[in-house]
Amino acid sequence: MNTVQPEGARSPDGDSEAYEVVFAAADGVGEDVVRMTRTSAAGPGGHPVYEDATGIVRAEISSGGEVRVLATGGGQEPARVLRARAVT
Image (cartoon, rainbow, N blue to C red; front, side):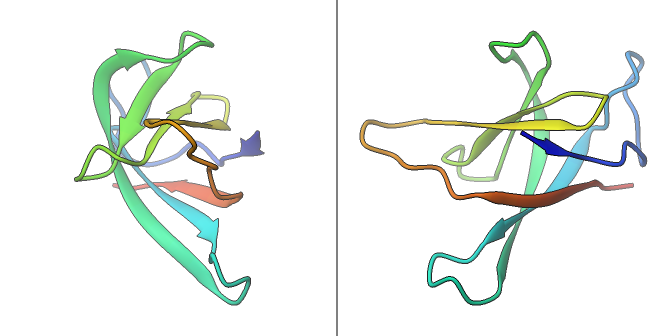
């Protein structure tokens, strides 16, 4: 899990409504940034689940800053998260 600096727009329970999650690029050079918005689901740790516009990239992000990428299909190998930042 990665640590996030919790900041930005918050829901009533203190969690951000959206994050930009920065992944290591698949080719090992550069970074890929994915904007993720909060869903109504909770992850295995009980924290909110966020997803990208396609619903393919999903992650559980705690208000304390932990990021857990969730597999959405068989054989998926989630990319390594470099950092995440709350979006205001």
